Image 1 (cartoon, rainbow, N blue to C red):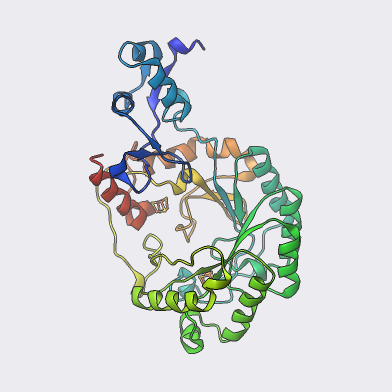
Image 2: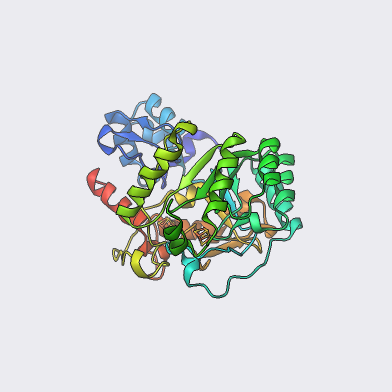
Length: 373
Ligand code: SF4
Ligand code: SF4
């Protein structure tokens, strides 16, 4: 279609800026370099909250600003404004089981964790579709499972290598063998490995995780570091204890690890984690405010169903199955777009949408107030 007759609108995902609102730096996709906008560009984006023909825009704004905003995808064609054609990661539930019951994980109350694994054929189909889609930076083999317990774990690594995909592995380390560490190293597909270490005190470690063999886990962590893997630590728990554990882990490991060891607050998984970590969040406004999890990540369960995000422990908000479509078509199906419209406030979200109970959405609300959004 002739560009003059094309309607444009500000991207519905544009409301995401980085966490420096006062510096006027904007981006849509997490990880993109934030872009500084001048007054005309900001005014153009405000003007285009409703769709408008390109030639009408030219009467008000410079062609340079319009072209620049289209180039950054801040201004987008109206018909495809809700489409996604990029993704940062695909999180694949290759198995269902975990052998720990961490106090900060919804698994702690689940008496019914099943030892099921994803069929290899489905796994291969997913990898093929990710490769065809083209923009995925990495995959994980997690939802709330321990991926290393999967009997096909070594085979999965081989397939990732075959499809030239990067892996970020989240593990509790309890079943990671030397052979696996070597395979991860030699495959070249491992981008990062994250070990769940909530305490360096063996007794406390057992209380938090339910797992008795603290020394075994630490030996595995040491082996992974010796092998030169890119080791990170997931340090979870109540704030004071978490800070103390972070200090201990830094004292023990920081010199051996190139990047800073960090920890972030434990949250209640949008209300799915009951008890001491429950945050009791309930956002009652009609319209929600957006969350980059739904534009940067895709979560696929053991049967191929796509669901909302990593907080959706019970996989309550499903929007399609990867076996029925290409990745592009799955992400841009009516159901997927309808869900994103709810998360981004275009359509009123039902009261039972998880986002209404999520700290990420609450933070987004605070950020928008700061920038006057
Ligand atoms: S090891 Fe991970 S998946 Fe397993 S219970 Fe702990 S936090 Fe949950
Ligand atoms: S707001 Fe929370 S529950 Fe909603 S998509 Fe984002 S991370 Fe998930």
